[in-house]
Amino acid sequence: MEYIIRRIKEDEVKDLFKLLIELAQHEKIDDRLKITSDKMATALFGSNADWHCLVAVTSENEIIGFSLFTFANINRAFNLTPLLHIDDIFVKSSYRQLGIAKHLLVQMAEIANLQGIERIELWCIKDNVLGQAFYQRLGARKLDFLDVYQLEVQELIADNH
Image (cartoon, rainbow, N blue to C red; front, side):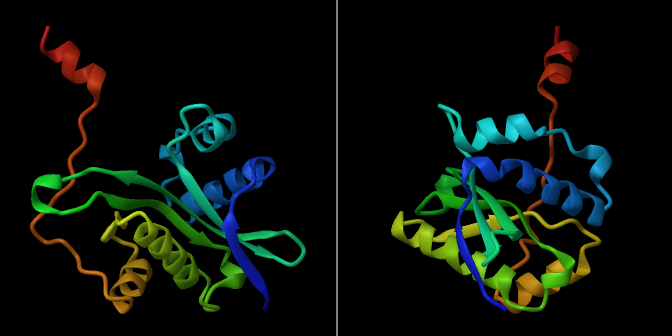
């Protein structure tokens, strides 16, 4: 099966958004999805865009997979470079097992390397056993010394006034 990996085009955001919904449903977290197609377009192509997306596209221009990522300066005291953080990576179910997700990851690694970035990080839902196994097969290490916590800004402010 032939496909290419490239950066997303602005007129493809609506199709990307549909795939993001499919991913959220697959992970059973669609009730937590907050972004809209318009907000996604702004984050990817607006004047302050800070989100990046690679897509896997067939010769018929069908998007069959994607990766959404950003660059961050997280934990710089203990790392020599910023990082590339993967927000989401997804391949349509009928196109899995063809190496597309690995190809997306390699493309992101090449982008990171060109920018002098030495690490890629991602969060994986705890019960996504297939995803965890996939990342581990590629050499990913699970960080056992770290738990992720989330604070809601407005709640924190309200509780302290």
